[in-house]
Amino acid sequence: MKKYIGVMLSVLAIVCMIQPLQAQETNNFKNQFNRHFDYASRVLSLAKAMPADKYSWRPEEGVMSVEEVYTHIARYNFYYLESSLGIPVAEDVDVKNIESITGKKNVVAILEQSIEHVKEAIKGMPVSKLQEKTEMYGNTVNGQAVLMQLITHKSEHVGQSIAYARTNGIVPPWNK
Image (cartoon, rainbow, N blue to C red; front, side, top):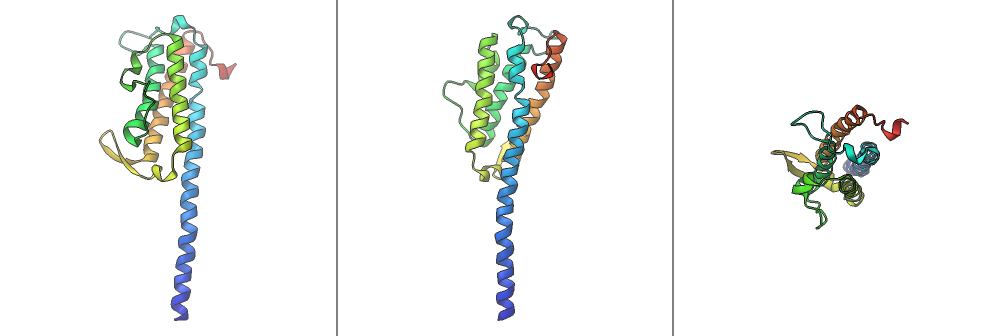
């Protein structure tokens, strides 16, 4: 009987240690996501630095313009959270038509709104949401995978935006 109680106490001790470690690991993911997201959000300062007359510039026909890249980033900041994680978008945001927004003032505003939307959603997101199964591009994934896709997508287009800026003689503000 003493041996049985000893084994049960050992199992209980292990279970009690694992649960906090899992929660800590998930919180660490949120912290890492926030750091990467903030780093990629430098694109907002680049959007503000880009002259308004360059917003319609594109490297060649059939390729996204400067403003199309920024609105594309904004759209998917909203889209991934809404479509895969069920996080609602403000009523005044038309996710399907974000990429038709034009003009520096409007583009910067929607990009900024999308960045704030993601930050607020992550701050208020229960850590359990990161492990929940969901659908993305026809695959079953968890919430962490959705957020990784958001970062990957955004980072790809930040690089594109840097190339567009430098081609137009604009030095990214963080490189000055």
